[in-house]
Image 1 (cartoon, rainbow, N blue to C red):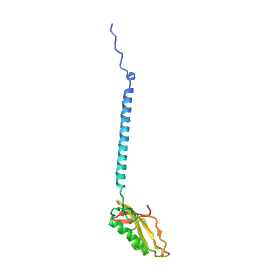
Image 2 (image 1 turned 180 degrees about the horizontal axis):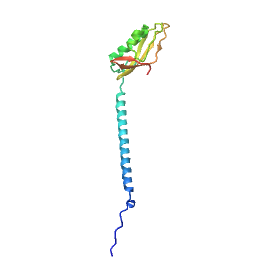
Image 3 (image 1 turned 90 degrees about the vertical axis):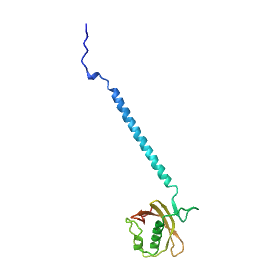
Image 4 (image 1 turned 135 degrees about the vertical axis):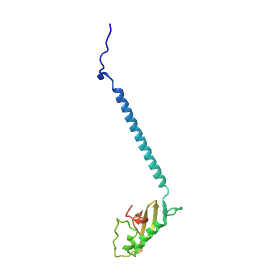
Length: 156
C-alpha cells in the first residue's frame, strides 16, 4: 500500500517568523537612529558649552579680561559717539540694516560702559550722561558681525 503526498497548500505555511524578523529589523533600526541622534545632540551641547565658557569682555569685568576684537570696540565707540552727537548718518554706518535710527533733536553724551564679544556676536551697554548729572544706564544692545564689520542690531 502506498500513500500519496497531498498537494502543497500555501495556507498551511507559518509566516509569523517573517513578521517577527521584520519587527526586529525595524526596532533595531529605530534604536540605532535614536542612539545616533542622542550622540549628535550630546556632541552639539559639548561643543557649544566649551565655547561659551570664556566670553571675551572689556571694561566692567573681572580681574582677567580677555582681549576683545578691536573692530567690535571701534563699532561700539562709534555708535556711542554718534548717539552723543545726535548724528544719524554716523550711527547708520554701524547699525544693522534692519534698524533705522531717527534724530531726537537733543544731544546727550553717551559712553560705552561694557562690551562683551563672543565669536561673531556681542552686546554693548552704554551709559547716558544727561545735563542734570545723574548717569542713566541704557539697556544692552546686540552687536553682530555683518558684511565684514560690526553692526548694532537692537536688544539681545
